[in-house]
Length: 129
Image 1 (cartoon, rainbow, N blue to C red):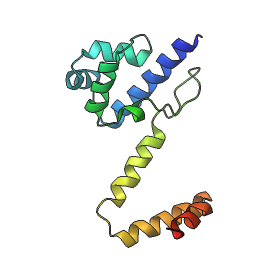
Image 2 (cartoon, rainbow, N blue to C red; image 1 turned 90 degrees about the vertical axis):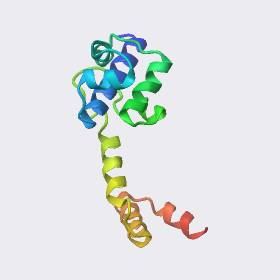
Image 3 (tube, rainbow, N blue to C red; image 1 turned 60 degrees about the vertical axis):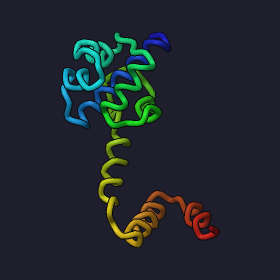
């Protein structure tokens, strides 16, 4: 498989995962982005090649920043898709959970994450501020 084909397949998987996360059909996403649902299907299958303008519209339609739209979580286009937007979905859930919480709760959650994930250096950097 060529590198171009791999990129198109990875992007298609990412787009499908983000569209599913937003619970949109191909037609609904297409309508929001100003393209046909058929073209969304082509992109998701790796055969459609969207322009930069269409990529920006897709990001806006999905409420996803353009760099995040292009941040592939999979490293191989071979085989079945394996969570093309799992990390993104998890980040949204954490952000949603912490939104509106008191600062002390957010700081405590950060310390818990740092301890769980082993990023002790982040705590040191934060305490130096």
